[in-house]
Length: 301
Ligand SMILES: NC(=O)c1ccc[n+]([C@@H]2O[C@H](COP(=O)([O-])OP(=O)(O)OC[C@H]3O[C@@H](n4cnc5c(N)ncnc54)[C@H](OP(=O)(O)O)[C@@H]3O)[C@@H](O)[C@H]2O)c1
Image: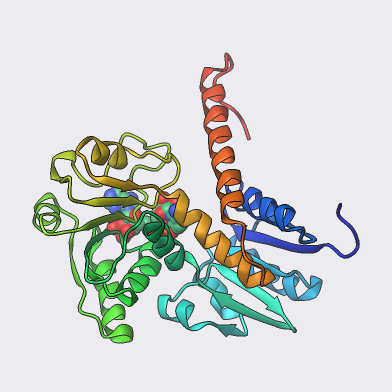
């Protein structure tokens, strides 16, 4: 029951209405008996400053931060932890003793998802596609895990600036290349892991893939961080070629679990959170199908 003692948490983003974080975090609060609720707040860029002041004013326990605020939010915080500083982006904020502190749990979420699949990363050859927010977080964590990393991105300047950053902050020697067929062919021949950290293949563009099927060998582990759909074209084709596959749900769950632990100090009920997110994903798919089949055509929001 919600009472006068119930603590509030939430997510700030725009758009945010499809976020799986509310079902995941509320399931975790219920399972652990923690007296708290988690809501989604659609906050546009102009409203971010006010929203952060609102956390202080209302004594909200903490928030997740998503597109487009992961970098912009940093200027409203009192402190940013070392990992988030390294990445240059924050996805989790904790409010305690009058101070807003920022963290980034995305990279840890990705590493946990790969470890869960029985995959260590030390000394492994990893081809990472993408240089956006998620790729930034994952690449920093991979370097810290001791992986040998090559980054491919469509926009090479963006990849180069990430590589420069990794070199400067971690002293790493990461290569970057244009996202082309030839470069994929060359790097994947030697690789142990292929990670897609672009949005290619995400609904509604589910027929797209960042890597042609014929380039995927059976000795690869292919990790796609896109979780909608869970089985992307990339993962389906990788499986058909005999590669090991890891979908985006594990990363989603573990980044949320790490946030839960930062806020509550309580061990996160990971399996409960996974089940809640998975059920919501399945319902979402049913909703989409219903929309498509409905006699009136489109659903209006
Ligand atoms: N599983 C999880 O927990 C989790 C967590 C975070 C994000 N994600 C997913 O990861 C994806 C990326 O998120 P983000 O926050 O990193 O987004 P972002 O910062 O906007 O970065 C997007 C990335 O995708 C690339 N890209 C987009 N369209 C492309 C295309 N047509 N061809 C080639 N590359 C393309 C961009 O390349 P350019 O630089 O060339 O534009 C960039 O590297 C999203 O689908 C998101 O849902 C999953």
